[in-house]
Length: 282
Image 1 (cartoon, rainbow, N blue to C red):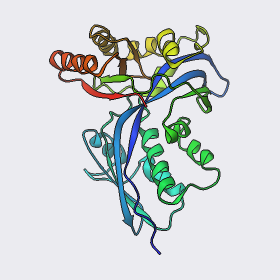
Image 2 (cartoon, rainbow, N blue to C red; image 1 turned 60 degrees about the vertical axis):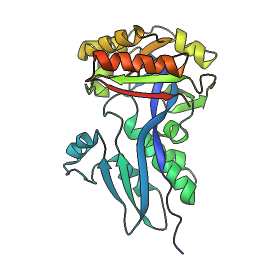
Image 3 (tube, rainbow, N blue to C red; image 1 turned 180 degrees about the horizontal axis):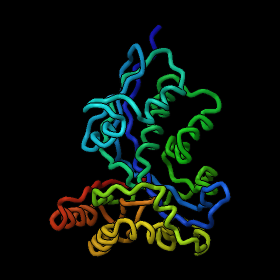
Image 4 (cartoon, rainbow, N blue to C red; image 1 turned 135 degrees about the horizontal axis):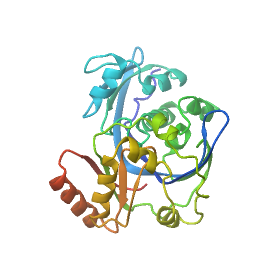
């Protein structure tokens, strides 16, 4: 008996409505308080049954991943998607096609989002094994959050998760990246070590408005164009604008889809070389 055909999935972009860095830990990691939220847009994954697990990467940002894997245009090595498939038992292999729509090293959890989508595909097709959360965490601290792709508060290194308010669900959001990759490690190493206080509590709206991203200053030192993106978003009618994660992607929340789309058009006219993605919070 063959297993069901695997479903299609979206790897939802992850943003940090707030990211408060509290201290450096002795193990080299940082103590964090963050509010993860997810946009209803992202990479696209589809699969068909196959003799073994394979991966073909297409899309605007495929070249970056294929170059990292040392493969050609449809390379299949060196990607977290294959690592996830190796951990998840199925009756048959899957040939997965990943359309890479999110920029790489962009503060959107793109690799973890792809893994989260794979876990959801396996869950729908044949169920996940007991203890799947631990398997997910092996592939990245934020992967368990990306599997569900719903608002959640992360503490510790981001792995201690607790439910979060979803009062901003449906809020129009615009993502903008200056097409400048910004690796996470150097940004964290550039944090000045100052504890500026705990993340606000309350609704998602309150956290977004009163919170901050403690990595922005470090990111600006490494990639000054992030400041230009934030200024462009702030000047285009946003309710609030902030860098996501370790950057360089920034996001802005709007009161209406019309205001978001007008801002996107304005930024496109002024900086057509920047990447943009419009969506809504899940």
